[in-house]
Length: 379
Image 1 (cartoon, rainbow, N blue to C red):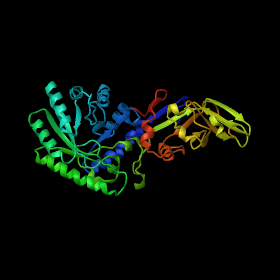
Image 2 (cartoon, rainbow, N blue to C red; image 1 turned 60 degrees about the vertical axis):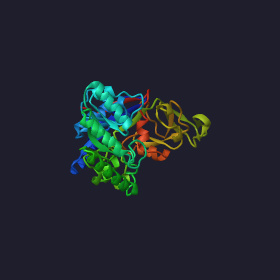
Image 3 (cartoon, rainbow, N blue to C red; image 1 turned 60 degrees about the horizontal axis):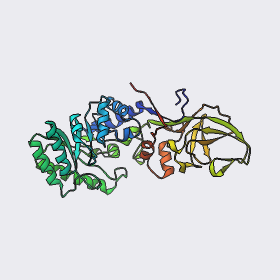
Image 4 (cartoon, rainbow, N blue to C red; image 1 turned 90 degrees about the vertical axis):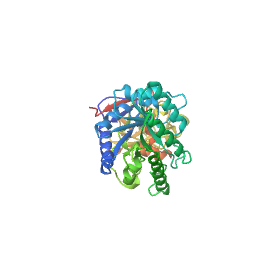
């Protein structure tokens, strides 16, 4: 795992793992006749959006998806020319730069559609639009009662040449809960929305499947799937079996100082841990300012010198302490806080389970000012 460099706090991103995961997901999509849009929002879920995008496209993805306009423009600035869909807007967002950069835009309302049409008219060019229906998630997306008016307005704008309606799409609420009744209910609502779009004279493709549905519901692949978290090797439906995904992020540091303490000596703020016998301690220069949750104090382990070892005492802002027992580890030794798990080290999913959250939150929250990011496997 080590690349023989001493790190203070580093995210090792394995783009070979990204390529492998996209190969798995795109293979499933192709078996259903669908293309693949890889979601690289939130800086590629903390992994680095341009690097992930390049790896995904080289592994069989045809499109990319992001939430914010600035995320889409960053991909263009990085030289990425593949189709990019952007779907979440603030009132202050400008559509002219997005349309100029050939970024595809989502519309969930007539107001947003009108803003897109206005921007396209200012540029004198056609904008590519995906119309989003709310089928039950109740976030963005057009409600069913307003959908007929939206598709009629879109058909009119398309006839006038200001937009081209590329797709009708929606998002699933409970695809990671196998057999949840809302999945089929949303699929039925999505079918109605699509038929209404067709009846209005549109000829769009369809996309609905997220990572979980890509892995478990081939009937919902339609023309395009949109995997997100699975691209990064984190399985949204582990209860459905091993899908062969490989986690791409490893969070690592190194030992800054070692010392031996006697029985009865306590560690860190509040003296919440006391040595029961003479032992060796290793100081690691990462803490909650670097993404290690303070709430894992007394509960977490790290991988150090070939085995799991407990973190003792409270996690501090900049540092934590590992009990290495009777093993005297060397200063500069690599410390893995989480990784793929293939050596036995903790994983992001394990952190999430301990914290009562999801692995999405762990990885997307890791990239911070003091944390470096090292990409391996890039071509």
